[in-house]
Image (cartoon, rainbow, N blue to C red; front, side, top):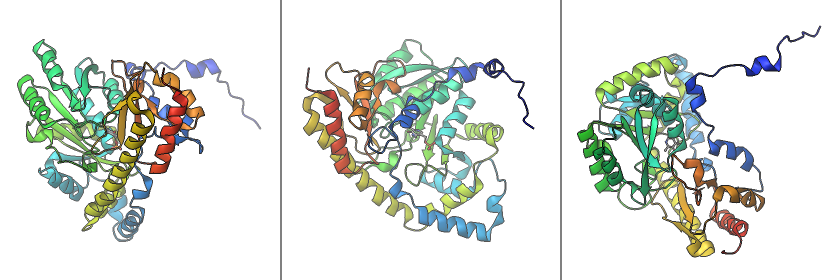
Length: 398
Ligand code: PMP
């Protein structure tokens, strides 16, 4: 017998969202990825790492062995995370495991930090254009976002200093100091030192989000902001150097904040997947694994970035301005002509290529003439073809 539903469509739509649920916009990038998932489209829109680099066999062996020998790998575990993995992450950052919390990706770390540090209405300063996931997490916490301009050397710390002098008092300054998403820029050493000094002087916390720092293929690595101030929380991630699907990230925080973050995480999800932590730990501590993994990723991404840069220069010439990055996953550039990249996107898709329009990363300012291209999942010949299609969609110079 069929059961008749007494519900009406109106009843289903009358649910009242709390303010936090209304504060958050859908990520334009995720929305776009639904559209570009066509086999004929060369998509430079995604932010995904190259799947052929995922250590699937090593992870499979690790999981099989762990499951065969230790049932506690399927048990609840501590909120702080698997101690040997915390030790591993701590060692890489020169701190003890007591300062490390394992999180469900660094995206969760962002959420936890925002919940612990951002009162609704508190000011958070960040680069504009900015990482969409940070904008979402910070807005969800009720932050009032203040956009700081950025250039080829990253966040314009001088512009931030001017605002601080004029009385602006952020609780947090969020920065992707290495190979920023979306701009690919790396914060210069001088600016790192200046930003840390400002944190000490004005009392804000720097959230240093660093999922891309290990993907450097040229030039010297810059020191972490935590080298210069004790008011720094660093977020790390396994997503870009091992794989994103196991969702393992971590926070390295000053001691009091580390304790507070543990309590917040306890309320949010008790702990990160025990098996994921164990498997990732097994793989990254296998002698020689990390060195071999990075030796594989860096030249692959370097060559793809070079192919994209070469194609952009030879195909678009002076029409498109960009700074090729020394690592990471993204090229950010801007058309010199007044071309709206959001309006151009349907034509680009019709010609069989996709990118993310700059406006998707806007915190406050206009990035209509800009776009983000991801080069890491596309082989060089396809990158060239993608740029050729972009040029075809663009048409001749106006
Ligand atoms: N921060 C930045 C700057 C990112 O680009 C990303 C991934 N796109 C993340 C954090 C989140 O990464 P995950 O949660 O996979 O560690």
